[in-house]
Length: 281
Image (spheres, helix red, strand yellow):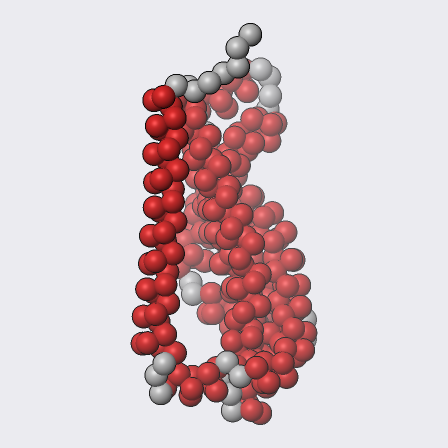
């Protein structure tokens, strides 16, 4: 049995691919060097850059602010962790209510639609003020800031996530639901075993984007009096008359978001490859 040897045409194709790959690498390196030179001349090599570096990127002040900003950042993470669970539960209930069929469920559909319209239209900062200062006034008692932040985040983001879940459910072909009902499955069983598993693939990328937005917005709970990362940065900045602590807080939020962003890109690319493979087959 003779060993496989590629033809001359295949060898020429491989050589062409290697040459094109080397050419692409050289062009990328050259363009990066040109871009770096332009940035150096127009930004770093200017008189104003020293002032920017002193007021925004002071290493000594960054080290001074890091412990306080980090302690506050843990509060942001706590609000985020609780909110992920509450948003998922509330949004799923609202999405299911909006997909119910039949005239008997008309009031439930109207209430669910009104909820999503209301909290998608209200700016999040207004919701924070209404919840953070309104609920303790109504209850006439002091409430934990973490609880108030979770309530505000849940009210706002459950409206967005509910629409994503509803769109994913309605993207599943009706024949899937009818086939499940024909097999004797009830509405809840068909939704849990047939519809939601198929809808999850379509919902995941936009849900990840909503999660990234929620990661950023939990930093706004500082207006309720929480000593979170933003409040910690503000306290250090007020003593040093320097904005570097805000940059430190921003870097922490960026580091929190980057894994989710990269995971979203990877999952989206994987879904696209699977769909293209299915189209080819």
